[in-house]
Length: 140
Image (cartoon, rainbow, N blue to C red):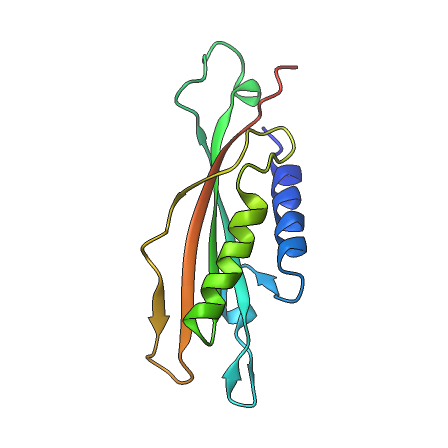
């Protein structure tokens, strides 16, 4: 089995350094906090994959084949401009970043799916981006 955990740890560490005052969590329930009636900003980061990479040769064991991976990032804030700023800081930090044993990360979606949650007060705004990369690039 391919160990992709070091690459995920690299990505999370890079994201933490890009937005050091904003908590990075795996679910909205973990991140949602209200102080003086204002929702605090947070980032939900979830990872996907591994999925067989379309260009692999398939002639060696599965543990040596490359895999497609992705990370979905939702920047959540009380104002849409703050959510957008957090997302932009993460894009600036992660675009073209090369996690361990991986290809460079490239944004591949999520630019037009920003949303708000006004079903309960206070309203939260979410700005979304997704990055993909190929993991298990080493041949040895």
